[in-house]
Length: 290
Image 1: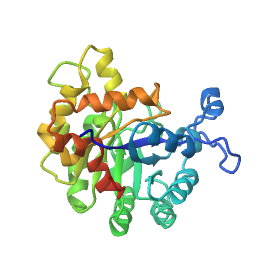
Image 2 (image 1 turned 90 degrees about the vertical axis):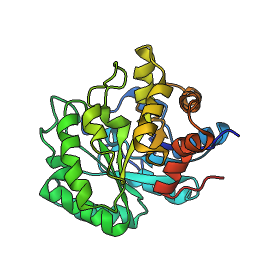
Image 3 (image 1 turned 120 degrees about the vertical axis):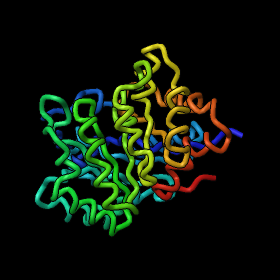
Image 4 (image 1 turned 45 degrees about the horizontal axis):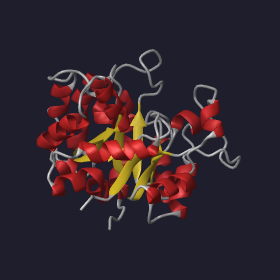
């Protein structure tokens, strides 16, 4: 039986003026404006390709920290969508923002380094591990939300090393590392960054998300996504590995993203494949699978 998928990383965009663009970079591309991945469009894609649900992830590059569209979309389709909200954990009102978005239905909080790239990002791990950021973790823990970290290659090693202490401080709060924490799985083993990632394997609340972004790079380098998925499952267990499309952020047709995801679990047992493709995400974000 083919496992039912849950897309754990689907970026939504709408050009509805009720949700104004507020891009940190000052502009939104014509492709995003003219061909948005609305909630309705995503739901149709889920239906067409046999997915039971998705995590609607805030597109901060388009809307900034106003997560209204993802929470409103999830509220309209609670059986199919769960909202993941992005905020700046170093902002003075960060802890209050967690409560605000939780009250509007968020099930997860996502953090990334302000600036988002090697030239504009802030060095160090303050963006998720500093004193103010820990108030965000504390609020998320009290409200039963999971935490998600978007780590870049340029801040990967120091961020992963800092995560262990934070995770141990909130042992009941699930943590998801996006895009395999930017471990360079498109290069020969030992993958750059793998040592720092695997040092977290003994922390049961740490999960790893693999996405089309990773798969595209692996395929371009002549590798097989299944090798990396099997590597992750062998280290973390299928209960702590999940898949997301990264649609609208990573280029490609949704049908191809789903196809590659299914192919990526071909070497796993039926049970483990079902967990990676949907079961793990369903448990984390309370999305039902058939």
